[in-house]
Length: 418
Image (tube, rainbow, N blue to C red; front, side):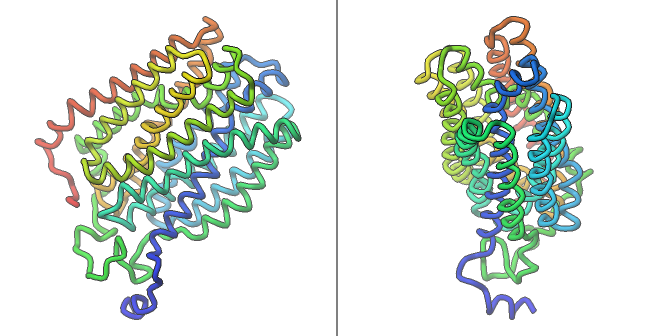
């Protein structure tokens, strides 16, 4: 059966179709989620709410879409990534459609927070986990290409949302984005496939039989992985940095508006993050394959910290654009490299489940960070403290990686050598 499948093998390795599907899922899912900053002022005005309470909508969604990976990851390992991703796109579409009809901020919490949060949570980890199984030599590049959908979504969707808001209001804009997720997102998710062996293929499209350690079926159990020193170190670093990572996605637009920058220019700053993020996923994901993916994480944390310091010192649109681009590059690299590092450490058998557990660290940080920044602004009418605190979290994360990497290596070798 495998020989027959190999005889009919298409010229384009199917793993790249899996990458394209994951790209589309992340583009639509995170693109819709990261338009939130463009809606923030409208929601404040229409519901008479504080900036902190409106920011909590995004924090709730972020907590769910990272935290739900602990459930969706193992389900994808068992039942396949495709049904999880399709369900996620449907939930995003329904959540945005219901948000468009909300009559109170509490209804926005329920519709957007739960709909988008659960939807991205169902789709993201399964889609990214599927990509890891299809590649070995070019895993960092393929992973970066897949998650570059987040960067391109951040580039394209906020300006689209601003245009929709200006043309049909924020309610119509949410409804239009919901239809996009429901139709296009679900269609692209159909291309996802967990295991190359089901198509008679090997990772990277190689013709030679797979070595045991390269098989997607090889790898550590979830419980074995999460008890390892490497995982503990990675979890702590991601938890701490995540308190600050998503603050710009919620507060950069209102920060710019507070400094007299027009609404259209402020929304474009999120797109600049998207440009940088896309570049970071392409360039740093591939670079990590050559310089070492674990070592690259240290670079990503340090780079995000430096960029946030630039933000703290910026007030005009040019300086904020420079911050947005630099931040986007290192944020994009972080998102690209992280799943590949997990696959390097623990193999493919339960990679979605292990990534899902790891992303609970990001979930807690996302729940607290953006909303805390909003409440800090409500008290002080300044973003200085939240921005400096965000930079500090990335410095601490970099220190954890730098201090624990060598000791973890001495105590326990990777459970799966690549």
